[in-house]
Image (cartoon, rainbow, N blue to C red):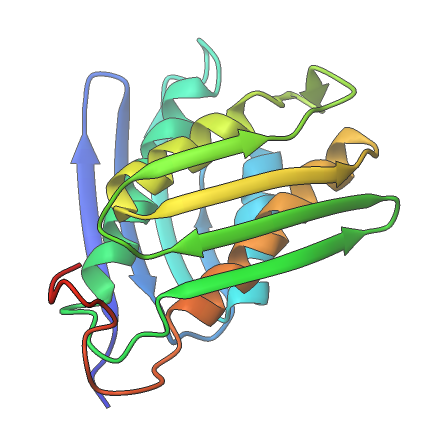
Length: 194
């Protein structure tokens, strides 16, 4: 079996990120984003997707977490896309309805080659600890763009902000896990290209 994995490095005046991603992984994350709550979400993402992530990140956290969260999303999406190679045999689509206690989230993905995030979820607070809740959308928008995938995230039932974020990351992990499953040999597109 071909190893579906990729490494990405990104260095700007705001962040420096080195990331390794494996689609068929151990469910574990090593390293840190430098943002405690984002680390918590990435650990859940790996565990529920069966992915593997190694992350080394330095960012301008003295400003805020925006650049770091966005650039990790960009790097993870790029590594995700690269790890899938020619995409032959992929299921391509994945969706899940994710309950997280009182919160209910729908996540759906199409590994289409066309980037887009369609996000309709809200938070009852502006922060979770030191983490700005608006960065959840920022992260997934960056991921969708560099993963070249169409992503829909919808909140059906409201709950506390921690549970909303957790439902989104767990739900996306499960949807992506379904989408990357190998179910055949051909490219899953009538166009002949993804």
